[in-house]
Length: 339
Image (cartoon, rainbow, N blue to C red):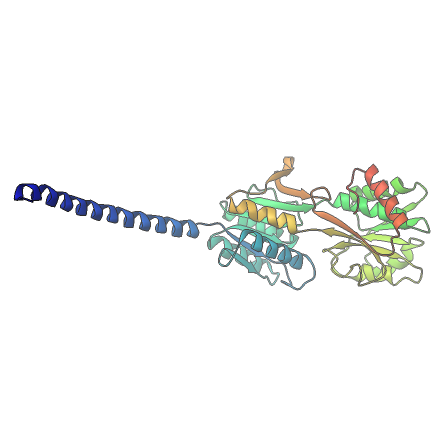
Protein backbone atom coordinates (compact mmCIF):
# COMPACT_ATOMS: atom_id res chain seq x y z
CA UNK A 1 0.00 0.00 0.00
CA UNK A 2 1.46 3.36 -0.99
CA UNK A 3 1.25 6.47 1.22
CA UNK A 4 -1.64 7.96 -0.75
CA UNK A 5 -3.75 4.85 -0.11
CA UNK A 6 -2.78 4.65 3.60
CA UNK A 7 -3.97 8.12 4.65
CA UNK A 8 -7.70 7.59 3.88
CA UNK A 9 -7.72 4.31 5.78
CA UNK A 10 -5.88 5.89 8.71
CA UNK A 11 -8.29 8.81 8.80
CA UNK A 12 -11.28 6.45 8.68
CA UNK A 13 -9.97 4.50 11.66
CA UNK A 14 -9.53 7.70 13.63
CA UNK A 15 -13.08 8.78 12.80
CA UNK A 16 -14.45 5.37 13.84
CA UNK A 17 -12.58 5.58 17.17
CA UNK A 18 -13.99 9.03 17.81
CA UNK A 19 -17.49 7.80 16.98
CA UNK A 20 -17.09 4.83 19.34
CA UNK A 21 -16.10 7.19 22.16
CA UNK A 22 -19.14 9.36 21.48
CA UNK A 23 -21.45 6.34 21.43
CA UNK A 24 -19.90 5.01 24.65
CA UNK A 25 -20.38 8.38 26.30
CA UNK A 26 -24.00 8.54 25.18
CA UNK A 27 -24.58 5.00 26.44
CA UNK A 28 -23.15 5.83 29.85
CA UNK A 29 -25.20 9.01 30.05
CA UNK A 30 -28.38 7.15 29.12
CA UNK A 31 -27.60 4.46 31.69
CA UNK A 32 -27.08 7.08 34.41
CA UNK A 33 -30.27 8.86 33.37
CA UNK A 34 -32.30 5.65 33.53
CA UNK A 35 -30.76 4.76 36.88
CA UNK A 36 -31.57 8.25 38.19
CA UNK A 37 -35.15 8.04 36.92
CA UNK A 38 -35.58 4.60 38.49
CA UNK A 39 -34.35 5.88 41.84
CA UNK A 40 -36.63 8.90 41.52
CA UNK A 41 -39.59 6.64 40.70
CA UNK A 42 -38.84 4.58 43.79
CA UNK A 43 -38.60 7.72 45.91
CA UNK A 44 -41.99 9.06 44.83
CA UNK A 45 -43.80 5.73 45.02
CA UNK A 46 -46.93 6.24 47.14
CA UNK A 47 -46.49 5.29 50.79
CA UNK A 48 -49.31 3.85 52.90
CA UNK A 49 -49.78 3.89 56.67
CA UNK A 50 -52.27 2.48 59.16
CA UNK A 51 -53.01 4.16 62.49
CA UNK A 52 -54.55 1.53 64.74
CA UNK A 53 -57.00 2.09 67.55
CA UNK A 54 -56.34 1.46 71.26
CA UNK A 55 -54.93 -2.01 71.87
CA UNK A 56 -52.91 -2.19 68.64
CA UNK A 57 -52.63 -5.69 67.21
CA UNK A 58 -53.96 -8.58 69.25
CA UNK A 59 -57.24 -6.93 70.23
CA UNK A 60 -59.30 -9.62 68.39
CA UNK A 61 -61.39 -6.76 67.02
CA UNK A 62 -61.04 -4.20 64.24
CA UNK A 63 -57.30 -3.76 64.73
CA UNK A 64 -56.69 -7.43 64.05
CA UNK A 65 -59.17 -7.49 61.16
CA UNK A 66 -57.42 -4.54 59.48
CA UNK A 67 -53.97 -6.00 60.20
CA UNK A 68 -54.87 -9.34 58.61
CA UNK A 69 -56.34 -7.58 55.56
CA UNK A 70 -53.22 -5.41 55.28
CA UNK A 71 -50.96 -8.48 55.29
CA UNK A 72 -52.85 -9.80 52.27
CA UNK A 73 -52.53 -6.42 50.55
CA UNK A 74 -48.79 -6.31 51.31
CA UNK A 75 -48.30 -9.66 49.59
CA UNK A 76 -50.55 -8.79 46.67
CA UNK A 77 -49.03 -5.37 45.93
CA UNK A 78 -45.49 -6.18 47.15
CA UNK A 79 -45.46 -3.56 49.85
CA UNK A 80 -42.37 -3.40 52.05
CA UNK A 81 -41.00 -0.84 54.53
CA UNK A 82 -40.73 2.12 54.26
CA UNK A 83 -43.60 2.15 51.76
CA UNK A 84 -45.98 0.77 54.37
CA UNK A 85 -46.05 1.61 58.07
CA UNK A 86 -48.24 0.71 61.06
CA UNK A 87 -48.49 2.76 64.25
CA UNK A 88 -50.33 2.33 67.58
CA UNK A 89 -52.08 4.93 69.73
CA UNK A 90 -52.57 5.45 73.46
CA UNK A 91 -56.07 6.69 72.66
CA UNK A 92 -55.67 10.31 73.75
CA UNK A 93 -56.61 13.11 71.39
CA UNK A 94 -53.06 14.48 71.51
CA UNK A 95 -51.51 11.11 70.63
CA UNK A 96 -53.96 10.36 67.82
CA UNK A 97 -53.39 13.76 66.21
CA UNK A 98 -49.60 13.63 66.64
CA UNK A 99 -49.48 10.21 64.94
CA UNK A 100 -51.56 11.42 61.99
CA UNK A 101 -49.42 14.55 61.63
CA UNK A 102 -46.19 12.54 61.84
CA UNK A 103 -47.33 10.23 59.03
CA UNK A 104 -48.55 13.09 56.85
CA UNK A 105 -45.29 15.03 57.29
CA UNK A 106 -43.25 11.97 56.36
CA UNK A 107 -44.80 11.53 52.95
CA UNK A 108 -47.49 8.90 53.50
CA UNK A 109 -50.04 9.63 50.79
CA UNK A 110 -52.73 7.31 52.22
CA UNK A 111 -53.29 7.14 55.98
CA UNK A 112 -55.89 4.62 57.18
CA UNK A 113 -57.29 5.25 60.67
CA UNK A 114 -59.06 2.40 62.45
CA UNK A 115 -62.28 3.21 64.29
CA UNK A 116 -64.53 6.17 65.03
CA UNK A 117 -62.22 7.18 67.89
CA UNK A 118 -60.18 8.99 65.23
CA UNK A 119 -63.16 10.95 63.96
CA UNK A 120 -62.33 14.39 65.37
CA UNK A 121 -58.56 14.18 64.96
CA UNK A 122 -58.86 12.84 61.41
CA UNK A 123 -61.15 15.74 60.47
CA UNK A 124 -58.49 18.15 61.72
CA UNK A 125 -55.56 16.36 60.10
CA UNK A 126 -57.37 16.16 56.75
CA UNK A 127 -57.88 19.93 56.86
CA UNK A 128 -54.22 20.56 57.69
CA UNK A 129 -52.96 18.21 54.95
CA UNK A 130 -55.37 18.56 51.99
CA UNK A 131 -52.98 16.72 49.61
CA UNK A 132 -52.96 13.59 51.77
CA UNK A 133 -55.75 11.02 51.38
CA UNK A 134 -57.15 9.64 54.63
CA UNK A 135 -59.53 6.76 55.29
CA UNK A 136 -61.64 6.04 58.36
CA UNK A 137 -62.69 2.45 59.05
CA UNK A 138 -66.25 1.72 60.23
CA UNK A 139 -67.65 5.23 60.01
CA UNK A 140 -69.58 7.48 57.63
CA UNK A 141 -69.61 10.92 59.22
CA UNK A 142 -66.69 12.92 57.80
CA UNK A 143 -67.61 15.15 54.88
CA UNK A 144 -64.23 16.00 53.33
CA UNK A 145 -63.11 15.06 49.84
CA UNK A 146 -59.73 13.75 51.04
CA UNK A 147 -61.38 11.33 53.50
CA UNK A 148 -62.67 7.92 52.40
CA UNK A 149 -65.33 6.74 54.85
CA UNK A 150 -65.33 2.93 54.93
CA UNK A 151 -68.78 1.98 56.17
CA UNK A 152 -70.54 -1.34 56.53
CA UNK A 153 -74.26 -1.42 55.88
CA UNK A 154 -75.72 -1.61 59.39
CA UNK A 155 -79.26 -1.66 58.04
CA UNK A 156 -78.54 -4.78 56.02
CA UNK A 157 -76.91 -6.35 59.09
CA UNK A 158 -80.05 -5.60 61.14
CA UNK A 159 -82.26 -7.13 58.46
CA UNK A 160 -80.13 -10.28 58.26
CA UNK A 161 -80.26 -10.56 62.06
CA UNK A 162 -84.04 -10.17 61.95
CA UNK A 163 -84.38 -13.02 59.47
CA UNK A 164 -82.18 -15.33 61.55
CA UNK A 165 -84.00 -14.39 64.76
CA UNK A 166 -87.41 -14.96 63.18
CA UNK A 167 -86.39 -18.34 61.76
CA UNK A 168 -84.82 -19.59 64.99
CA UNK A 169 -87.23 -18.35 67.66
CA UNK A 170 -89.20 -21.09 69.41
CA UNK A 171 -91.13 -18.88 71.83
CA UNK A 172 -92.01 -16.42 69.04
CA UNK A 173 -90.47 -13.48 70.89
CA UNK A 174 -87.22 -11.87 69.76
CA UNK A 175 -85.37 -8.72 70.85
CA UNK A 176 -83.09 -6.04 69.43
CA UNK A 177 -81.09 -3.91 71.87
CA UNK A 178 -79.74 -0.40 71.32
CA UNK A 179 -80.94 0.12 67.77
CA UNK A 180 -81.67 3.45 66.11
CA UNK A 181 -85.22 3.80 64.71
CA UNK A 182 -84.17 2.84 61.17
CA UNK A 183 -82.29 -0.27 62.32
CA UNK A 184 -85.20 -1.29 64.55
CA UNK A 185 -87.60 -0.92 61.62
CA UNK A 186 -85.31 -2.97 59.38
CA UNK A 187 -84.99 -5.72 61.98
CA UNK A 188 -88.75 -5.80 62.52
CA UNK A 189 -89.51 -5.95 58.79
CA UNK A 190 -87.10 -8.86 58.40
CA UNK A 191 -88.68 -10.81 61.28
CA UNK A 192 -92.10 -10.32 59.67
CA UNK A 193 -90.69 -11.63 56.37
CA UNK A 194 -90.25 -14.96 58.18
CA UNK A 195 -93.41 -14.93 60.27
CA UNK A 196 -96.01 -12.31 61.17
CA UNK A 197 -96.74 -14.19 64.39
CA UNK A 198 -93.44 -13.34 66.06
CA UNK A 199 -93.30 -10.46 68.56
CA UNK A 200 -90.39 -8.03 68.32
CA UNK A 201 -89.11 -6.28 71.45
CA UNK A 202 -86.99 -3.16 70.91
CA UNK A 203 -85.00 -2.29 74.04
CA UNK A 204 -82.67 0.69 74.61
CA UNK A 205 -79.25 0.29 76.14
CA UNK A 206 -80.04 0.05 79.86
CA UNK A 207 -78.54 2.58 82.26
CA UNK A 208 -78.48 -0.25 84.77
CA UNK A 209 -77.47 -3.47 83.04
CA UNK A 210 -79.01 -5.53 85.82
CA UNK A 211 -82.43 -4.37 84.63
CA UNK A 212 -81.91 -5.94 81.21
CA UNK A 213 -82.58 -9.53 82.21
CA UNK A 214 -86.20 -9.03 83.39
CA UNK A 215 -86.85 -6.62 80.50
CA UNK A 216 -86.07 -9.38 77.98
CA UNK A 217 -89.07 -11.38 79.20
CA UNK A 218 -89.77 -14.36 76.94
CA UNK A 219 -87.36 -13.32 74.18
CA UNK A 220 -85.28 -16.30 73.13
CA UNK A 221 -83.18 -14.71 70.34
CA UNK A 222 -81.34 -11.41 70.88
CA UNK A 223 -79.46 -9.07 68.55
CA UNK A 224 -77.55 -6.33 70.39
CA UNK A 225 -75.58 -3.37 69.06
CA UNK A 226 -73.71 -2.80 72.32
CA UNK A 227 -70.01 -3.40 71.59
CA UNK A 228 -68.04 -1.44 74.21
CA UNK A 229 -67.73 -4.46 76.48
CA UNK A 230 -69.34 -7.84 77.14
CA UNK A 231 -71.86 -6.78 79.82
CA UNK A 232 -74.98 -7.05 77.64
CA UNK A 233 -73.73 -10.26 76.05
CA UNK A 234 -73.05 -11.80 79.46
CA UNK A 235 -76.54 -10.94 80.74
CA UNK A 236 -78.22 -12.40 77.66
CA UNK A 237 -76.22 -15.62 77.54
CA UNK A 238 -76.42 -16.31 81.29
CA UNK A 239 -80.23 -16.23 81.50
CA UNK A 240 -81.87 -19.22 83.18
CA UNK A 241 -84.33 -19.51 80.32
CA UNK A 242 -82.49 -20.50 77.14
CA UNK A 243 -81.73 -17.38 75.14
CA UNK A 244 -79.38 -17.29 72.16
CA UNK A 245 -77.38 -14.48 70.66
CA UNK A 246 -76.61 -13.12 67.17
CA UNK A 247 -73.12 -11.59 67.22
CA UNK A 248 -71.56 -8.72 65.26
CA UNK A 249 -67.87 -9.14 64.45
CA UNK A 250 -65.31 -7.71 64.72
CA UNK A 251 -67.28 -5.13 66.74
CA UNK A 252 -68.12 -7.67 69.44
CA UNK A 253 -64.77 -9.42 69.85
CA UNK A 254 -66.16 -11.14 72.96
CA UNK A 255 -68.93 -12.97 71.08
CA UNK A 256 -67.92 -15.50 68.48
CA UNK A 257 -69.17 -18.80 67.13
CA UNK A 258 -67.28 -21.61 68.82
CA UNK A 259 -66.37 -19.68 71.96
CA UNK A 260 -69.89 -19.74 73.41
CA UNK A 261 -72.66 -22.22 72.44
CA UNK A 262 -75.25 -19.45 72.85
CA UNK A 263 -73.86 -17.65 69.78
CA UNK A 264 -75.92 -19.07 66.92
CA UNK A 265 -74.75 -16.72 64.16
CA UNK A 266 -72.04 -14.18 63.43
CA UNK A 267 -72.55 -11.17 61.15
CA UNK A 268 -69.05 -10.28 60.03
CA UNK A 269 -67.66 -7.09 58.55
CA UNK A 270 -64.94 -8.28 56.18
CA UNK A 271 -61.96 -5.90 55.83
CA UNK A 272 -60.13 -7.72 53.04
CA UNK A 273 -61.77 -5.94 50.11
CA UNK A 274 -61.90 -2.43 51.64
CA UNK A 275 -58.19 -2.47 52.51
CA UNK A 276 -57.29 -3.94 49.11
CA UNK A 277 -59.38 -1.29 47.34
CA UNK A 278 -57.78 1.54 49.32
CA UNK A 279 -54.23 0.29 48.72
CA UNK A 280 -54.72 -0.44 45.02
CA UNK A 281 -56.11 3.01 44.32
CA UNK A 282 -53.46 4.75 46.44
CA UNK A 283 -50.71 3.06 44.41
CA UNK A 284 -52.36 4.53 41.32
CA UNK A 285 -52.48 7.92 43.04
CA UNK A 286 -56.26 7.64 43.15
CA UNK A 287 -58.77 7.41 46.00
CA UNK A 288 -61.91 5.55 47.07
CA UNK A 289 -64.51 8.32 46.92
CA UNK A 290 -67.93 6.97 45.97
CA UNK A 291 -70.70 9.33 47.07
CA UNK A 292 -72.14 8.05 50.36
CA UNK A 293 -74.09 11.13 51.48
CA UNK A 294 -74.28 13.81 48.81
CA UNK A 295 -76.01 16.43 50.97
CA UNK A 296 -73.23 16.28 53.58
CA UNK A 297 -70.37 15.66 51.15
CA UNK A 298 -69.48 12.26 52.59
CA UNK A 299 -67.35 10.05 50.32
CA UNK A 300 -65.91 6.56 50.54
CA UNK A 301 -67.73 3.27 50.03
CA UNK A 302 -70.53 1.31 51.67
CA UNK A 303 -69.82 -2.41 51.95
CA UNK A 304 -72.54 -5.05 52.09
CA UNK A 305 -73.13 -8.71 51.29
CA UNK A 306 -73.27 -8.10 47.54
CA UNK A 307 -69.80 -6.55 47.30
CA UNK A 308 -68.37 -9.08 49.78
CA UNK A 309 -68.06 -6.61 52.65
CA UNK A 310 -70.46 -8.57 54.85
CA UNK A 311 -70.32 -12.29 55.53
CA UNK A 312 -72.69 -14.40 57.62
CA UNK A 313 -71.65 -17.49 59.54
CA UNK A 314 -74.28 -19.80 60.98
CA UNK A 315 -73.51 -22.05 63.93
CA UNK A 316 -74.37 -25.72 64.27
CA UNK A 317 -77.54 -24.74 66.16
CA UNK A 318 -79.04 -23.69 62.81
CA UNK A 319 -80.29 -26.90 61.09
CA UNK A 320 -80.51 -27.33 57.32
CA UNK A 321 -84.25 -26.71 57.17
CA UNK A 322 -83.90 -23.46 59.08
CA UNK A 323 -81.11 -22.37 56.76
CA UNK A 324 -83.47 -22.85 53.81
CA UNK A 325 -86.07 -20.67 55.54
CA UNK A 326 -83.45 -17.99 56.20
CA UNK A 327 -82.28 -17.87 52.57
CA UNK A 328 -85.86 -17.71 51.26
CA UNK A 329 -86.58 -14.73 53.53
CA UNK A 330 -83.32 -13.00 52.55
CA UNK A 331 -84.27 -13.39 48.90
CA UNK A 332 -87.58 -11.64 49.59
CA UNK A 333 -85.62 -8.75 51.08
CA UNK A 334 -83.18 -8.63 48.10
CA UNK A 335 -80.24 -9.68 50.30
CA UNK A 336 -77.62 -12.12 49.10
CA UNK A 337 -78.24 -15.67 50.31
CA UNK A 338 -75.99 -17.31 52.88
CA UNK A 339 -73.73 -20.02 51.47
